[in-house]
Amino acid sequence: MSLIATLARLEAVSTGRARPTATVRHRHLSERPLVFVPLTTAGEAGAPLGALVGTDRDAPRLLVVAQPRDRDLRFAFLAELADIVLPYIDSYADAVEAAERSETDPETGKRVKVEVELCSDAPQLIVPSRAGVEYVRLLGRSMRFRRTAEQDPQTPYPAPPRVPLLGRWLTHFGERSRVPGSSLLLALTEVLGRHWATGQSSLEDQHLGALLAWIAPPGGDSGAEAALHAELARDDKGQLLCPPAGPATDPAFDNKLLAPAIERYDRARTALAAAEDGLQADDRLGELTAAERVIHELVLSRTLPTWEKVWQGLDLLRELPEGAHVEERWTRDRWSFTGHRDRVVAGEPPQPRRDDAVTAANKLATREREQGRLDAQEALDDPLVMAGRRLAGEAFAGEVVDVVMTYSEGKRPSPRPLVTVRTDDRPHLGERVRVFRSLGGKPQAAEFVRRAGPDGAGGADGPEDEGLLVLRIVDKMGRGKEPEEGSVPEKGDRVCFTLFEHEQRGGAKLPDPEDTPWTHGGPPGEPVPETADSVTEEDTL
Image (cartoon, rainbow, N blue to C red; front, top):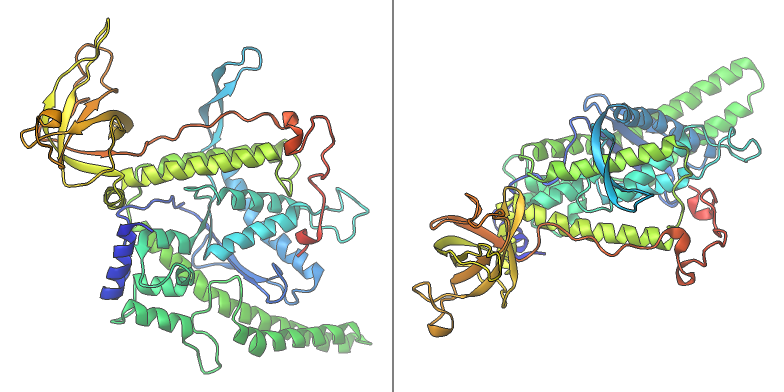
């Protein structure tokens, strides 16, 4: 946790309200996100009980599994979920634009630019909390390996046709959510926690009601009082007034309301199956319908408060202006969405349960690179985030007090101006350490030369002033003998330099999967021990 975040939490405790830790919004928000509020049963990992899902704030779709242990009812729930989610995804798959992408020419081995299709926009899935993201990944894993009757007529318990496809998409959303800065799948508590600091722990921030209570406490309550009420307040039946954001339910709800309702449903279903004539069947069908309606009302009572709070949180986030680099990161999400769309259309198999060594290494390298890029871009977009980097000695800002034009040695001297900056920051600078500033959206590099004296000279021949830094600009000044206009700071300018790079460098090229050595799954030519469609107990809900 940065010093700025620590100070913000202390201020939140002191003032009773959450304090902002960002001045802009660092995540993309779609104009039409799909909000998914899942609910699961206790005791069986991933067994769905119900969900509220949809893009219309005022008209959510309620999905319910009256008996979560019934495989047929679970498949019906997943099929209905697919009928909602897949059309939403498909609505973004057809609208495309022309874009250029670098690819390796198989004949020459050189990188060339080719024109390809890029989806103009991409779908966005919003869940209440971090646990919701893990549940999406679990659903994807349990669904993408399912066999349909068309694929395998002999398979026991065939899945509805669209269920495996939904599993592949949910797996992609879940995998993409692990890439720092991605916005295809967002946990609302994570996004709100990035932009506001509360007076409670990050674990307590996973309770959406408590988090919103700190950010916008109702009435004249303090954040702590409102959060405590959101966490503990119960009605006269002993049920929480603000249910947890799921997917787990409250034990009091399970024991006092849900279990008796499901038991009543089971009795009614058993009685209907044992009916001896049509009149008796009609009466017992009415009892079954009434029991099922009670379960629907119970699920709605647990999910609707969370549904409303998700949209309340989105309203708070939309009040913040979007950061300058957010659109760039969303473009990478669009590339990811387009790539998976193409793999599905091409008929490629579902994602394997375990990645091979090369794929896993590439994923890790990508996430590390994106984390570095995200940290740099958030600081460049947001002065409050940059202030944290300055306090940590990773950046400094100040006023240019002197500019001396010098040139490099050689046959063709290039401009290497010396810029003296007065700053109150204390950056961790060493000899010839490179620093960077943003110039027209591109990083301009400079080298730290020395600390100047009070008169700007200093160095080895005079006393040094900790607040005067002499830097040598080394690039982004054009190809001429004289620097291009605006490429060199002028006396009196306010500048900000960072010790971290603004763009992340790529790592070494990894071998192709078929050339992986035996230490990492080879030797080449051996059959893969596990096919993509294999099903294990862990894949079964």
